[in-house]
Image (cartoon, rainbow, N blue to C red; front, side):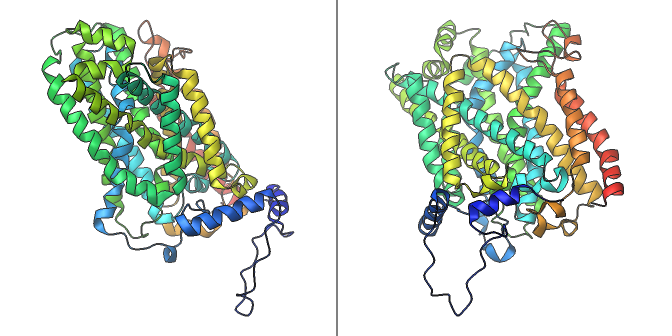
Length: 516
């Protein structure tokens, strides 16, 4: 199938054949390169110079071949877990822990759901992560082998929205903490801007800097949450029964499951981005386990802390009053002495940066894979656009954090469920779990990829399943309406069944008719 984007790429590259310029031969290797022409060419040339000096990854979306990868010592392989520990043990997960109380659940129910569902969501990400080292491709490139060239563009757009929205949540929660620690002298708007800009700066430097930063950043937040457990655990209210009963309780449980699952599983669409530098023969069991528990345990720590503090609001009216002012105020009120609480809260503000670093980095990669011309735009420009979008989303949703969390995190889980089901069925059923069955050199050539018809049909019907089973503040699907007065979110469960059942026959017919 001809690719109409090649013509535009050719004009941007200045190569009439739409191909990369050939490498210089041995005879003219010392000849000076012609100066870049045009604004885009100059920007790309600038990024390449930055890459040579700082390693900013001017060719970030290109496949990392075996000869391009270096040996990674065992202690650096721990980044498979520690990267996610830094990105998930944060104020956003702490805020999510308060939602069980909002849905009428008691402390015991909230804790069980938080821990078990965090592990479930972590396994989804762990499975996606195994593709990175084996293929040398970023996550959005991996999915081209199931979604094909054109449908995968939709997936890339959705992933951009997801990463930017998740980063915006971190900016809001971190900004609230910064406002509280300054006793209101730093406005929420300024706090959001500070967090977003600092994360953007770290992301621009590239993957190596991100891995080094995230490898150690988690330690600070682990210590803070342990202190939080030590000082607030005595007030945990495990005697007050759930305020919801019957069908309403069932609906609340289902909705909380959807939110916690979405919080963890949403990393599946970027997982491979952070494993392409490992050797292809690295143990996939190791990758799966370190990733799964690198997400599940830190996520649980942050959310369980939120569950404990939220339950204490029943018996600590002063904490409840502080919570009405904002998330940061209840953290500050629940810790002591006051000066120490401010210090911890200041450090906790930085947790929003960790999540934003991952979101901005992966969003830029996804922007580059929406279209061939987009891939020619330097990554640092896409990261700049990502920064602008994050600020817009965070500033727009800063006044309604709980509604933002409930609506946004559930939506993340819906499409991630369809995505991972399709990618895993393609791998285990149609490619027999054998990476030799992938034409990895053809990852960027439409004619060497599937048409993606089976994936498009399964994903499209999965969208119908979302709508029928979702329970949001702005829409409750017909299936969700059957559970309780406010509905119960069954979108993930229904989407899983529909996508899994539709993809197999649809992909089989696609292979039978087109042969690829």
